[in-house]
Length: 127
Image (cartoon, rainbow, N blue to C red):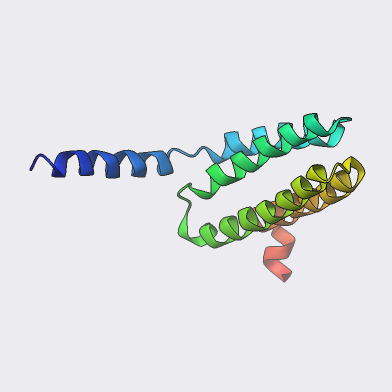
């Protein structure tokens, strides 16, 4: 019984952590970090913003979402992780201009998945 209680406590706390992801707050902070990255003039500044953005994406992946939206969210977060890894690799190579060009892919993914998350009435009717 003594061994069961700590195991149960770990399970409950892990489940609570996953359920406590505030996607709206994460999205707002992602917007801030993206802006910092886009406006950066130094590699270290941009790298910090991209790392923060990557951490927010990873945290968001652990959230619990409605079943009808879960696959869309996870697909978007995974694509975003790949795009951010590409930006980071450009920064590691010391090429801030190439990193900023890759950042456009991140913005394209944002637009694409915001449209998938909240489709317009027209796309629902005719899409």
